Structure formats: C-alpha cells, structure tokens
Image 1 (tube, rainbow, N blue to C red):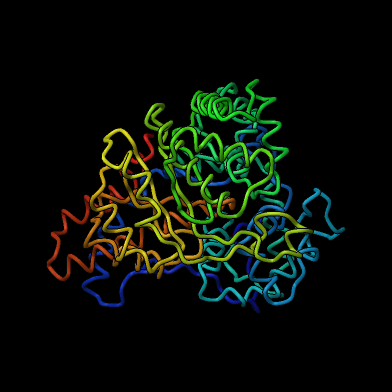
Image 2 (cartoon, rainbow, N blue to C red):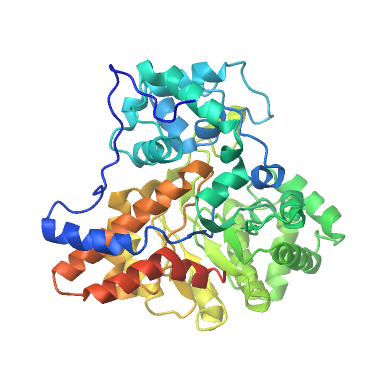
Length: 479
C-alpha cells in the first residue's frame, strides 16, 4: 500500500508550515519560535465525546466513511445543508437502523462535495488527517475519491492504525469521554483492567436525569432508581442517587462533570420549595418555567456536590438542541441541527455564585455559544470570582477566527490564567491532533502579536504558550 498516492491529474495536498501565522514577517518569525516550543507537547484532551469502546476493544475501524464521515456532525451537517440526505451518507437512525448504503458511495458523495468545506475548520482538520495521519499527498475530490477510500480503509486494517496505536502515535497523555449516569462504564473498566497504559477517563453528564424536558427523562429516572437502589421519586433519594453515581464515576477516573443546559439559569430554593418542585417534576405536571427552575436548582445542587467530592463542574449552555424536528424524529440527537442562542450569565449565575462563588475548592468552567458575552459578561466574571474559569471557544466558534476573538475579548479582564487552555470536544478521534495543532498555532500567533507590540517579552510569551497548551488544562481539570 502506497502512503503517498499520487496522480498526474490531481491537485497536490500540501500543509504549509506557516499556516495560521501572520503574514507580517516579524510576527511570523516570533510565532514560529513559540510554536517550536509547544508542537511536541503531549495532548491533554480533558473534555470530548470519543467512544470508549474503541479503546476497550481495540478493533480496527471499518472503513474511511465509518470513521471520518458517519460520526462527524460537523461534516454531514454541511452536506445536509446542500440537500444531501443523511440516509445517502449512511447516518444511523434513532432506532439504530440505517439505509442500505455502500460506504464507498457515501464517501464518493463527500469527495464530490468537498469543495463545500473550503475555508472552514472542517477542511483544515480533515486535510491535516489526510496528510499527517494517512500520508496522502493529493487533494480529495471526485477524481480521487476511490483512491482515498481504498488507501484509508486498507490502512485501518493494519496494526499501526488500531485505536490504541493511534492514541499513542498522537501523543495523547489523557482523554476524557462523556457518559450518562445510566452508563455502566464497562468499557472504561475493560481499559483499566487490560494493562494498557493509555489513560482514558470518563465525565459525569447527568442531563437525561436532570432535564425534565429531555425526551428520555421519565424512563431514565426510573432506571436511575433501579441502578442505584434509591427511591429517586423523593427529593432526598434523588440527590443520594446522584452522589452515588458521581462517586462511581470518580472511581473510574472522572475528574469532572458536564452540563449541557439550554441556558445557565441557576436557583437556590429552600429545601421545602425544592422538594415541592421535584414532586411536580416526577408527576410530569410542570410548566416550561418550572422545568427551567428545576434545571437551575440542579446546577446549584451539583455545585454543592462538587464542593464535597472535588469534581470540576463544566457548563455548556446556549444551544437550541434538535432544532430540525423531522430530522430529530428520524435520526435522533446530535445530527447537526443544534443552533446557538443568546445566553445571559450575570443574573443567571448569581444564585449559584452567591453560595459558592468565593469557595477556593470549587471550580466551574464556563463555555458559551454567544460570543457577545465574552467581553461584557464572561471575562469580567472569570476575572473576579475565584471559582470561575473560561472554557475555550466552543463548537461553532472553534475555528481560527473564533479562537482569536476569544483571546482578544477576554484577555483584558480574565487574562490567560483564568482560562483552561484548549479542549477539542469532539467525536472525531483522528481530528484531535489537528484541532490541538490549530489551537496551539493560533495562541502562538496571538502571543507573537503581543511580543511584536512590546506588550509581552518573548520569554513570557513562551511560558504562556506552554501553559495554554499543556499545564492549564491539566490544572483546571485536576489531571
């Protein structure tokens, strides 16, 4: 199998060593020196959605489409936006079934339409994967589709491309997956008991048993009780069940929790009122406003538990999930139809911060899909409260421009050291090195500008670059 595959009629695939650095020669030279000090650092991936079964079973990935197209909603949402059906791409339905599609034909669709990704982060990530991971040297298009499919699929059947081998090749020091409280974490147990040195940990994501408007909430709550042996239809039993599962997750390596709420409303109700509200929730007799208050109360309860058990709390608000109802009914969650919405933090977080904002042993990492809040709300909040840290530019904003805006708008109030470095937050395993490389390049470019403007000495910039790439995520997530 050739690793370089070429064709006289194909366009060369080249990764320029100066990509994402300034065109100004002074800044570019500084950025290159800074980047040289971080490019070989291990990858710390403290929050993401890779499948732990990959690392537990260490089985070969099936083919190019199953690995690089089917799990990546960044990719197939763009194709869908141009009228290509998810069935034609082989995306599974909510019930686990899928249309009978030849993976090669799905890949050909991607290749034929790869021009749609020009200038997008997906193009940058995928080309990095093609070039650096698979050694391809021609661009993906309709004419090279079969060459790509065969080359990648053949490579995936070799020992060098097994999940654990790639984990080690990518120099990943630790990666966190994200699981529901209902998950038995059997794959994490298999990894732990296998003797393999790769560090794969979990994170506690309780949304299905916290959000009354989640479509799985009634059945999830029932199973939550069966799993823990607690009467989860009482307020006290429900909270005990959370504490029990959090302890189990911590025993399996978890250092964090994650909460994907529609907004960041928090509440701090007296116990009697919380108990009464919970009674409405379990009976299914609640209004949308009461559902929001309950979610807000549970954020405060989770904060209280974090103060006790030390798990770092993450809040990812501001997404209108499953906006495309017809798509949701057929294909289920996480199919590229989530849309950012405006998010308010200052008033919404105050009940939680009134209780825990000054606690030195509590840590809350905030994310946003509403960039208008960077300078107005998030930077000033994190620049004051000891418990708050800012997560990096997230999801729709993890493009180079979004990463730059994040630094530009939060530096003056939060500095660098009230942020947590970078996390890739991805299901696309092979894109992880590409995503971290982009983040490191943008941070080095940003720091180079400060050095060139004499706002920072280069030795200081070098220390910051290393901290952002490696030390701060380990510190923030207690890794």
